[in-house]
Amino acid sequence: MLMGAESSGWGELDAADKARLADLLSRVEKKGADMLGYPCNQLFDYSELLPFLAYHMNNLGDPFAETNFGSNTHDFEREVISEYARLTHAPVDNMWGYVTNGGSEGNLYGLYLARELYPQGIVYYSEDTHYSVAKSLRLLGARSIMIRCQDNGEIDYADLFETLRIHRDTPPILFANIGTTMKGATDNVGRLRQILSELRLPGSYIHVDAALSGMILPFVDDPVPWDFAAGADSISTSGHKMIGSPLPCGIVIAKRNHVERIARSVEYVGVLDTTITGSRNAFCPLLLWYAMKRLGFEAMQKVIARCLKYADYAISEFERRGIPAWRNKNSITVVFPRPTDALIAKWQIAPYGDIGHLITMPHVTRTMIDRFVKDYVCHPPTGLVRCPVGGPGARAKTTSSELSLENEK
Ligand SMILES: *Cc1c(COP(=O)(O)O)cnc(C)c1O
Image 1 (tube, protein in one colour):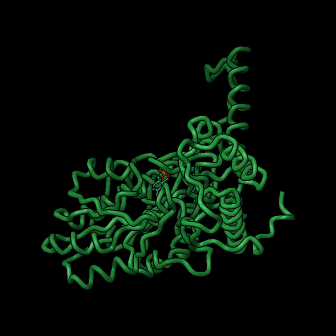
Image 2 (cartoon, rainbow, N blue to C red):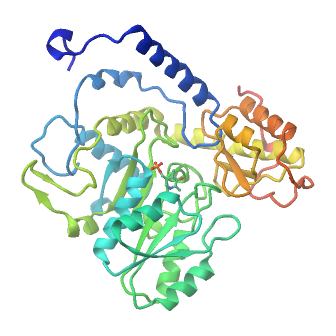
């Protein structure tokens, strides 16, 4: 609530503190513009929503159930969930979800549901799975087994098959990656379902971690089978990654019959306690609703196509200089040999072992790519083995004649 300073007890900031805020603003402006290694879209305009920051809103409880706490955005949250459920082919009469604090919470939720349904179940996840998942498994006290990856970051189906076969008396909970953090690799959910049915395993569950690519694959022509149509039981995605948002957020969708089996009602707030936290952010559902209204399906298709084109552009610029760079199909994550520490800091690159990546998010321009590649070539990592053009990394790329970036900044 907007207030007079007197009744609130809030005094004015002194000059030094005001200067600190100004410094912070310029630091954030500068860092945001140079962000090449993290998948946080910096292109958005939510200024129309600023008036809502003057109020406390709280989405505690299940967005699909009644509550006696009125200052919420549950109606907007439901629209966001319905829209994402539609994009992921969730069964219309059997879907449920809520807006989370990010992809990690959605993954925790999916694993929580699965563990409640199959208390003895074993969680299988690939070695390239996001680091937060091991922690969530410990939180839940769930049994788990790590599965090998192929070189491109996709789960090794043969290793999974063998491991499942050895444990065929225990319900499997498969944790699938749709866009791994480091290599943008996607596990084929259709193939996971097929493996489960070949082995005739008892009850099973597939949770899909689609933090970044969950907002890419709905907008491309030929995605790998990955969503509810392919056999997912729950899907988590991040809101601040592909869509872009000033606050971290995400969406989790699950089949409603799973959720109903574990829902508990709480008298104090008159809500169904189906979500992980009590009080929940009410502003983020509004942000996502607003972005979905202003972007729309065709606009997203164009944004994604441009990101993919820029990823190919980055690959061809690396390759032209003999540096092996590559990406997975429908991924905007471009992988190359790990840069020097100085470059990692300057460009906010996330390194892992001997690789680094850049991610051609919507705010990434051709100029940024050119500057980075030039910087990389001038300060190459030690031991870099250059390859001939079209060498080992040349996967899933278009030819440079298909790249027409001339009209873009
Ligand atoms: C970023 C990421 C996460 C975590 O999502 P947050 O929104 O940061 O919580 C989980 N899985 C993958 C594959 C990611 O890339």
